[in-house]
Image (tube, rainbow, N blue to C red; front, side):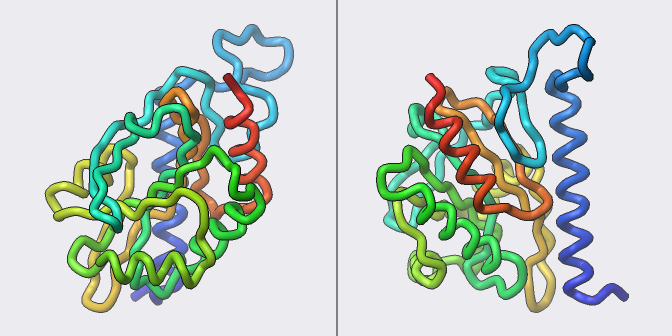
Length: 211
């Protein structure tokens, strides 16, 4: 039987492969030098997966955040979105990503045109109190929303963003993926092999500067 840390590594590897396959099915990759490009990827983005402009609309959804406010992808048009999937009680990879996201927010500063959307993978246990405690413990600032709902409300969002969720007796295993959505509502970048805060902050600044 696999140990839990190895299981988490396996889940992350599967997430990276699934994300790559799904994106390759729907996007045009930048060709090698000397080959004509129908839709070249923008120079400068540093994510694991870079997606050409206006080629992949971000799936829309509406869920309530930790303050009971209804938040949607379409309702935040004009801002860069970082969309990820976490469990506020997780003791494995979620705290690590929480720290990394806090680093990104501090690097960008209070004037950043970024909204962080965290979709719950633990509908039975995530609460506004546990979500705010998670955010506080990792130094989150700026505009962030922890989006929760019932299993029936969350499952279509997980599916739309290729997130695998597997409850176990003492934990919830899930894909570790972060998407960047540009100001026009298109997916532009994906992180599936672990966030690198400096590179993520760089990509947010680049997308924020684009008209």
